[in-house]
Image 1 (cartoon, helix red, strand yellow):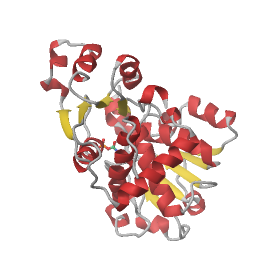
Image 2 (cartoon, rainbow, N blue to C red; image 1 turned 90 degrees about the vertical axis):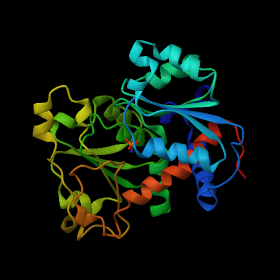
Image 3 (cartoon, helix red, strand yellow; image 1 turned 30 degrees about the horizontal axis):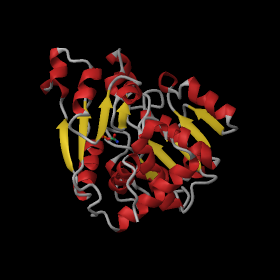
Image 4 (cartoon, helix red, strand yellow; image 1 turned 120 degrees about the vertical axis):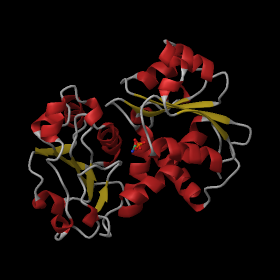
Amino acid sequence: MNNVSLVSISDLSKEEILELLETARKFEENPNQRLLEGKVAATLFFEPSTRTRLSFETAVNRLGGRVIGFSDASTTSSSKGETMHDTIRMVANYADVIIMRHHLEGAARYASEFSPVPIINAGDGANQHPSQTMLDLYSIYKTQGTLENLTVTMVGDLKYGRTVHSLLMAMYHFKPKFNFIACKELQMPNEYKVFCDEHGIEYHESTDFSEEIINESDILYMTRVQRERFTDLMEYERVKDLYNLHNAMLDNSKENLRILHPLPRVNEIAYDVDSNPKAYYFQQAQNGLYAREAIICKVLGIEVK
Ligand code: CP
């Protein structure tokens, strides 16, 4: 890992990813351990969040640490013009680790360059969401028994969805095959397709969310169209409801198929899917607690037995 911060999933080697998954497994067995006694974590959320912030804060609480921070930057001195540089330098006086979400791509990387304490990227614009990827990998491993040689179908907003970008980069260690299902406005950005080409990863792009593609998938990774990233709201209105998963579409899917979604969902998964045993998105969010306990201990150099 670069400078003990976790900014991009590519900061982690395959071995480090596997170690973190093993640590998450230990935390699932025993989530309450007093490993952060005397430590303070700061959660700086310049963008809205439910799961990421609350699961990081729960992780710190369950490990016996304390949390400071904000969930609304308009109540902080950044609204008076304080720069991110100064905010991070200040908060580092109070906390042992900073967990931050920001709308600007590269914000966490920038902070990590001068922060004297580790930075954990809790999402930077459309770029990266590495802690989400760790819980996604943990969920995939738990449900499939392996991370290797899986067919992963990503559906929805592949342009602005940072979770699919991070997951794609992490899965490259495990010889995946990808299906990218998106309308032409929201296709997987070229840089990620080049990444696949350079690493010999097979992918197939389609605008058609066909049952044939669902039926060959091990993981169906649904995503929300990210309204907050659009500059043209008319375009958002045009594309927001193009891909909807209904229970009947899963009738001939593989037994091991699991449906993941980083959440929040809007309309992309119908409520009739929730009772299907292949729906895994709420357990996936629960796995976030264990994955984030593991990440916090890793960046603070705390051994987990
Ligand atoms: N998956 C995710 O990042 O959810 P929140 O935006 O609620 O944190």
